[in-house]
Amino acid sequence: MLNSASYNSQHYVQAPEARPVPDERSPPGLQQQQQQQQDNLQLNLFSNSVRPPTSKETTIRSQNKSKDFTSSSMSSDVQIPYPIDWIFPRLRTPSMLWYIASQFVITVVGVFSKIVLVFMNKTRVHNKERLIRAVTARPKGIPLVTVSNHHSCFDDPGLWGTMPAHVVCNTYRIRWSMAAHDICFTRKLHAMFFMFGKCIPVVRGSGVYQDAINLCIEKCALGDWVHVFPEGKVNMTKEELRLKWGVGRIIYESPQIPIILPMWHEGMDTVLPNVEPYKLQWGKKVTVNIGKPLDLNEFVQDLKDTRVPEPVARKLITDKIQDAFRDLRSETERLHGERA
Image 1 (cartoon, rainbow, N blue to C red):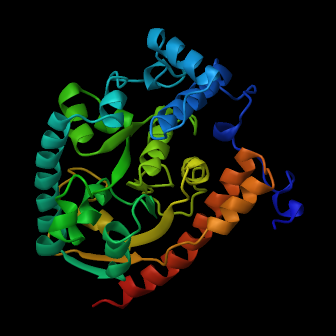
Image 2 (image 1 turned 60 degrees about the vertical axis):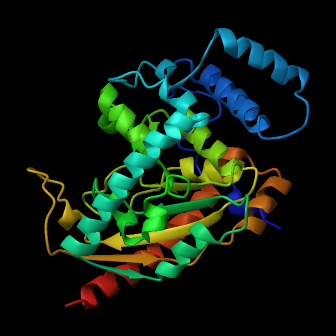
């Protein structure tokens, strides 16, 4: 059982993006937005169950038909360069046509990533079987959440080029991943490409209560694979950043506690440097290290059983990932440095 002192408020101060009640640092209308996002999530999770809807769910569903709260209606403090509200329904309930288009995009990108990582550069993957086993052999209905550092814009999809073709070129098996709305979804053609590539537009600065996080939780409810860059941005300085709590919310609110697999990589920023002219390079050294799965089942269940406040629970879960990152980074840097 968790000791109450371990999550005392004097040790864990809620970050602004995780505050359940808006304060002077929260954008206008956040409380209404958060409640609507939570209601929408519950309704979408209900669609995968067989119980009849409650009266509240029926009322909310009726209201949502006339008023749709999506990322486009978020705080005016966040700039949306291109409307993304139409993307979420397509990702939430993909049609057969969507799957056909997605299979084409995933295959092209998968082959390209494999050429760049395997043939153009010198990539070495440690404990690769852990990732392949988690993707292909986990129990049915159990979601997978992979987490990794973010050093280059080519991290995703590049890293997956090291996986077998039957995974990296299969839209039914490859990950769902969040991508910045102001970089990947700035015009319709780009938005369609990344949408078919199973990328979910995340609005940075809108906190943990937004459609991107909700959709990741829904995909976990379906037993899918979701990849998260918890640093929240390309970490060009490679400093140790406080991880964003969105990953904690995904894990905490997933109906089935996912398999959590940490990864660390070195050298991806030499394959695609973060400076102009942003051209892919040849012959660079890349090291990828797949960590051991984090067994947080009892920990997460204990948080729920003891009714720990949700923002605190999210932080405690995220702290576990931060600790795993710290150890994995040290090991990967050593392995990378030992290569000739």
